Length: 307
Image (cartoon, rainbow, N blue to C red):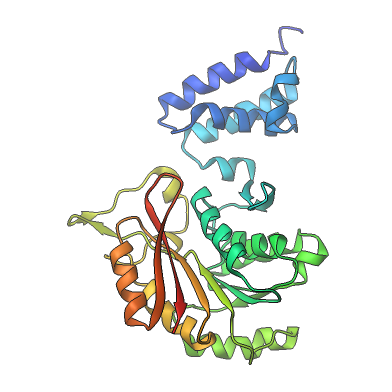
């Protein structure tokens, strides 16, 4: 090893100290991800690396400075892994303009995979990067998925991620540029965009998953404060009015309009709005309403069945 080729342990130790000082929640994990990306190796193989070439060290330093400034790790490395129920993961490209998928949403995917009937017709409302839509198509080889998204910027990332999947996965996903709070607009969009691609517009949905904007803009009478990393997400993909319900409530009309009696629904929500979500589901005629907690034990998901 030359003076210009430091060891990974030296670079990691320095990075952890700098990221900790910057207020990053997971400094060691982030440092590992950044160095692995600079070296073009899997994170688990860092222990096998003896020294870091100058090119990789320089790239690592550039990325480290971006992360120190609290740019999301996923933006810095340009991708995020979204876990599948079998332990595998789909690799998604992300960047400015699209919501970064969170590990908590993997719970919704697990529920959907265990719930979807054979040959199901499924919709992913507020699809964003396509994490749920692609995850469902990857985990269940016999279902068709409608990925619904209204943001032009997010649609670009969504289409890019679908196109990057193997053909057997990509060909079972249809993208719909539409607003899930506008049922009539969704029906028009289905006829104009999805039907020409072979989507069965007259066939009701068997299952709907939704990770909509749900963070309240106000908490205890003051504007909600979020981390710099969350502020990097599009505000329209994060916040949903003062009570966090501005998308979920009208979205239920779209679910009912495109579903049928027995259609299953899973919706992620803020940990403070579980009671409101359950009440909205009941008011909309859903039954079997069940609250589910995320890995941290926080109420994060409600599932229900259309009556």
